[in-house]
Each structure stands twice: as structure tokens, then as C-alpha cells.
Image 1 (cartoon, one colour):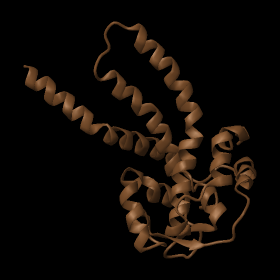
Image 2 (image 1 turned 90 degrees about the horizontal axis):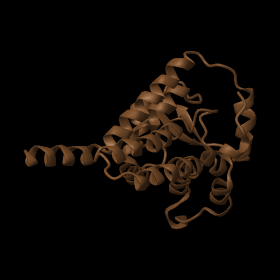
Image 3 (image 1 turned 90 degrees about the vertical axis):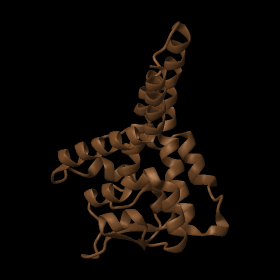
Image 4 (image 1 turned 180 degrees about the vertical axis):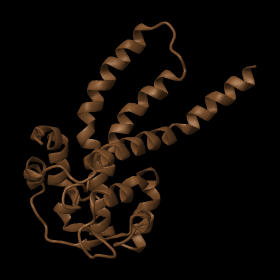
Length: 211
């Protein structure tokens, strides 16, 4: 599979990698988590910008916009963000940030690198990311996602994050790869829907009250 390098290593991601260390006092683990989150934002930022610019132009040109329209439109970039986030450890069970700081996700039972599916399950707790940060402050090797996936985080050799491009180009199809992709898409949509659930409930309550 060939993915243009600039889609992953753009101006924003390079800035994260070259100058990211805002929580030195809290240690390497939280720095890695923060970089993981920031890199995912940096990767999708150009995509979101291209998406929202025409969106705002259209909104400005309309006399009346359905109240649900902005919410459903917002689900699209958040779904993309969720998809990238839950699959960030797809290659060698190491995200870009984990390569930078020297970490790898391991299967707790086999003591081997976690499978792609385990990594997806582990990262599905992105919606409670602040809670995961708190848990990681007390346990740097296992957070809530690890409990779900049966994994742990181990120390590993640091490596050039850009080597992931070689793995993307070389890695062939994995077993049940189609199922994994669909599972990732469904989880991403579910997380996106949950993220706007409060707004949806508020609109429903307002609509019921208006009647």
C-alpha cells in the first residue's frame, strides 16, 4: 500500500516531533500520550481545514440551516480523527509517538507484540482520554484500554518515526483485514455519535419543550 508521505508527515506533525515536550515534569509516558494525541490532530488538521472551509461558505450563503446540520457535519472530521487514533499502533504495535519515545504495545499473555485488533480495542477508549491520562499517571504500563485488550506497554528501542512509511509500503494484507477496517469504521462512527450526544439530547429536549 502506497500512502504519500506528506499525508502523515506534514508541517504540523514535524513541528510536534521536533519541539514537543510540554510536560517534562510529568515524565516520558505522559509526553508520549500527549504527542500521540497531538500528532493525530496534526495529521487530520489539513483534511479538516479543506472540509470546513467550503462548509462555512455554504452556511453563510444559506438563509436558514437545520439545527442538526452542523452537528452531523461535525461528526465527519471527528470520525476521521477517531479512525486514525484507534489505528495509530497498527504497524508493529508502535504509533509514531511510541517510536519517538521508545514504547511498544505487547500482548499480556503471549508477551509478543499486540495484534492489530488488540490495538484497535486498546485505543477505543479515546473518548475518555482525560481519564486515561489520569490512570497513566499512576500506572505507566497499563491504562483502561489495556485492561480491555489484554495488553501492556513496554519499553522498546527508540527509532526514527518516519521508518513507519517503509512498513506501510511493505506490509501485505493481514488476516481478517477487511473485518478490522469495518470494525474501525463502526467504532469511529460510534465514538463520533457519542461525542455529539449531549447536543442531540439538548435539541430533542428543546423540540419537545416547544410543542
